[in-house]
Structure formats: structure tokens, C-alpha cells
Length: 442
Image (cartoon, rainbow, N blue to C red):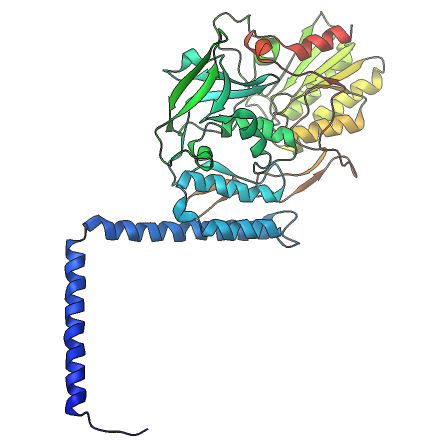
């Protein structure tokens, strides 16, 4: 390298550049001085937010790979990876509420009913409508509401934000976690409440309200604006409640004691026993195992001609508790071959309750009535809970496989007697399934 002294010309050049640099720095300082104080912090916060959500996406993929029963031993689905990469580029465009929905879209690719991301999170302010919906055989209806919307109970919902209900629910089939289509039918009414769901359909992020197109109880078409509220009372998918209409009949048997884990009663004297099994868990005053033995002893003593087992409200629990109950039912059938067993299932029959009905289907001659359950005889399913570090998004990644009937490929157990529930029957507090069974089995 050749060394040389700096010439006067070189010195002049450096001096000019130094002066220009000084002016530039002064300009930047003046610009920053007059810039609104919060714009720098907002920009920094947005950058941190984007990086935070991107890290949550990476964390979710990593947890899927580490924990999921299928994908811990094989590559993650290519479509999942493609959509995750695309989502990372769109974080700045989406609200936090929509990001929770988008994470659920990623969880869909696990293709089981126990792997999901909830629409609420510890560090996200999720809002939803103070309404409760239910999908009946004749459409979506409002079955409960907070003030000032209680007058909407009993109304049919045609559109939300101008979008047909059929389209909203059909779209969910391609992104809501599921074992079969009845999982979506079960979850959809609760997911439809959340504000973030409607951003992909044009609702502006942070909108204070949303418009519903309805048919009221007088068969008149009306539109109603519903204000969103914080989703602080969201605790999962609620069990079906009795009709809230004032002119309804008395509460039907199947809705009379839904919060009780298990109980039974007699119909038509001792000829029919109705057993409602609402949760696979112990009571404070009696374990499921003790009840199973007591219930089995009662069946042997009373020898009913018809045993009705209702699991329409049972979304699972601890399947390790099931054996005494199942053995009592099997022994009853073996020793009373002329008696009949009918199991009533529905979209809320899930997880450990699915194992229960699968074993009953495998080991007895029980008939099934109602609508199919939300799961399959054999399924990937376990409540293996996770939380993502930035947003506090909560969910589950299933890490177990339950094979109750080896080789069974059915998506659900098809009812021998398919009976659905209409809005009119529900709001009148009628039970078409139980009525059908009792009449059929006379």
C-alpha cells in the first residue's frame, strides 16, 4: 500500500464533507425534536409487536413438531409451513384479535379436535357479542343474551356483517380444529361471537359494534346493531340450557340437571331407566367408579326393559374412570338379553365421552339415537395445554392416540335413529329424541 500525506485539496474536500455531515445531523436532530413524541414510541411498539407475534408463530410450529402425536415423527404439513410464513409477513396488517384467529387457522392443520388456539389470550383484549347462539336443524338462533338484547332471544340470525350464516359456518370447516364436521357445528356458535372473526369479511379492526340481520319471533325481518364487550366471561363452549322464553313449557328432563356429572331416574315405573352422563369425572360426594358399581347393581335388581343412556352434554374428562361404569352396563346386558339399550349422542359428545360410546358400541348391542358425536371411534386427542410467550395465546396440542375399536375408520358413529332438534322444539322445551325412543321402544 502506498502512503502519502494529505494534500490541501484533500483537506478542503474533507472539510466540506464534515460541514455537510454536521448540517445533516443538525437537520435530523431538529426533525426528531419537532416530531410528535409518541410517534417514535408507536413505531418501536409496532416493531416489537410484529416481532412478538412472529416469535409466537415460530413457537407454535416448534411445539407442534415437539409434541403432536402425528407430527413429532414426521414433517409438518407443507401447507402449514407456507401459511405460517405468509402470516409472519402480515402481522402489521392484522389486529391482535385477528391474529388469534389466524393461529387457529394454523392449528387446523393438525387435523384433530384437541389441537387448537383459543380466541382469547392473557395479553390480548378480545371482544365478543353479548349473545349466545345455537345451530338448530332450521338455522342459527339467539338462545340467550345480556341486556339490552334480551328481546332478541328466539330470533333467527340470517346474516352477520352482511355475510350469510351458511357461508360463515361453511368457511369454518376449513379452519376450525375438528375430528369431524360435527365438531365445527358444536364450536361455530361460540366462535361466531368474536369480533376478530369478522375482520377477514371487511369489519374494521376495533369496530365498537356489528349489525345482525334477524327474523324476530313475529316472523318480521329486522336489523340490529350489537355492541361488543370484553370476552372476560368466556370459559369454553357452554352446555345447552333450557329455553329462556317466558311462554315455554316446563323444563324437559334432558335439560333439567345438565351441571350434575351423572344421575339416573325412572320412566314408566321401573320399565325404563334414564341415565344422564354429563361429565367423565368424579363428584365431590361420589366417585364415578363408586357410582358405576351402584348403578350396575341397580340395573341388575330392577331389570328395566329399556336403558336410555344420554351423553348429549358430555364433552369428556378422565377416561381412566370409565371401567366400572362400562362393566356394569355390559353385565346388565349379558344377564338381561331381552332388555334394550339406547345411547343418545350429540355434537357435544366428545373426548373421553367418545371413548365411552365407542366402547359401548364395541362391547354391547346398544342402539344409537340423536345426532352424531363430535369425534371418531378412534382419534388423536388429549388436552395437552400450551401458552405462547408473547401474546399469552392459549390452546392445546394433542399428543396421544385413542384406539377404542382397532381398524375402525368411521368419522362418527352413525345413529340408528337420527333425530335432530329444531328451534321450535327447543324453545318450547320439547325433547324429540327422548320422545321418539320411548314411543319406538314400546
